[in-house]
Length: 144
Ligand code: ZN
Image (cartoon, rainbow, N blue to C red):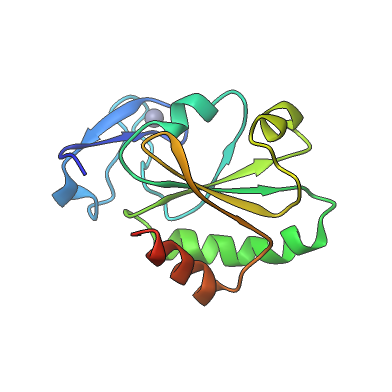
């Protein structure tokens, strides 16, 4: 990883430079002053996809839909992972119904789908929900 790290703001998409040593200090966005690393997932869509894929922290995307039961039961697990991975990985949720074009572009065949991006590229994908320990183990196997 480079230092300082480039981190896009989950609210205003502004790209921030944060020294690695300050990742634990609840860094704020230079543009909108919002928290950069919230320990919570944020919504990904066609409007912020390109901006959010940038940056030096990995981005884990949960592709879901409101009608999908397994997606709904996986949601709290994903939020727990977001809290545990704060400062190491950013987590976002992509509503496949609200953004069908983006889902098609990502070649989503079933949901929930988990896609891990690093350096703006997809590096790993997992289909189906996982219990928290398995989710964290899968991410560890990807170096997170
Ligand atoms: Zn901001």
